[in-house]
Image 1 (cartoon, rainbow, N blue to C red):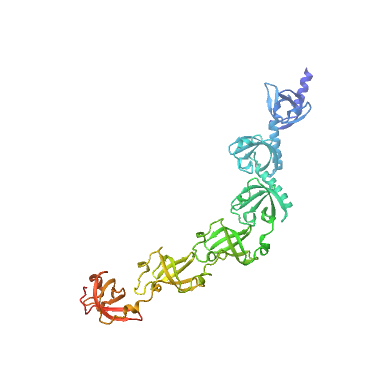
Image 2 (image 1 turned 135 degrees about the vertical axis):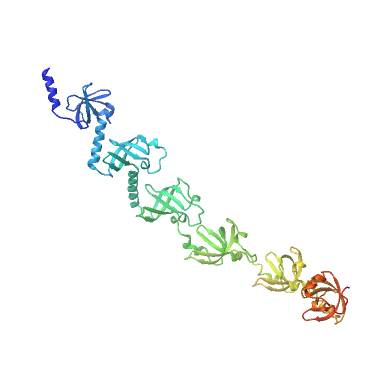
Length: 521
């Protein structure tokens, strides 16, 4: 008995173990829930089996590292911790390496404010913003995740470690991207999947690397929006058209799989050809017409109609409509084609010279009235001008609207035709002989007449004589009257007695006087 006690005593003195020290021990017994470990101390220690990461591998004689926390006098056993030993060992490893940037293995154990705690042999903090490359919506999904982490910060005083999973993922992704990038060459045809669609193009996932298929490289023809040619998830075959190694950017092309239609445009189109196209864009100065995918030409606003004055192409064109056009010019190098729409239609002015000859009587419709005359439509697209001076032989017409009405039919005579200038002059008075000479042959000076006031101006009175001719009584030929008094003393429709003062045959003017007459008729 004495010898056993002596042996234990000697054993206890064999080594002085400090509280908090990590020591090596030997498993001397494995039970269902506990493991007994000999650390060469005065008593063995008992640990819970679940403190071991792989308890099923434990056997009697296995060596383990544990942390000595003290001695339990009541139980008579050493207080040991495998977890704390692992944590201490990990911390010591981190301190010995003392490297921010080291890669450690761990498991996300729980959520805390602002992120997670990760068991890397000790607890390390993983900010929520560093758990993944993409923003995290469901944090619970990461609990229990076994992964590698990058040590981003070590606080030696507080024994705190901050780790990042995101940095490691990005590092891995960048390495994979660089490797993928090194395998690509300009002109290479590759397959990818449509990952994202924007207004300016489509992003294609090539596997560890995304490339941009710009809208201008999708088709030789016009593309309204990238979604017209690609849908999310589509498998697509594209051509590598540019590689930016520094920015790790790839430019892709779809249209480059086929040849540029402008390269052979002169084999299919030549000046003077009439072709059918589709209106694809309308601008204030004209319209773009697609002749085939990738080949468009401009119809200038001046080439839209032979006869109609077009203020904006949208007055006669609409997007998508088919239009017959004629090739006016073709520049293969500049990739420009000028088109004419009116040239694909018969020019009504070409036949106008034969159809409307000077002296012909025709009937038209009054389309517009101005101060200087009336525009008469003779047929769709062909109008002529009836000048105010050609309305009447006998009356000086002040405004065409006084005697003509818009929309009314009217008979006129062709006075002149200019097909180059697209002008036709018309006359109404020419339909009858000039009655002036006959009507004025008896108008001798002093002849008394009766006249009706038709217009009052500041210099006199215009009157209509019994035979329908017009004459002027100048204010100086009206007794006791000035220009300001005319409108007060007389009104339109009043009848006056006057006499012939002078007849100007060349100027077709009749001057009258009231000086020798009693003014009232």
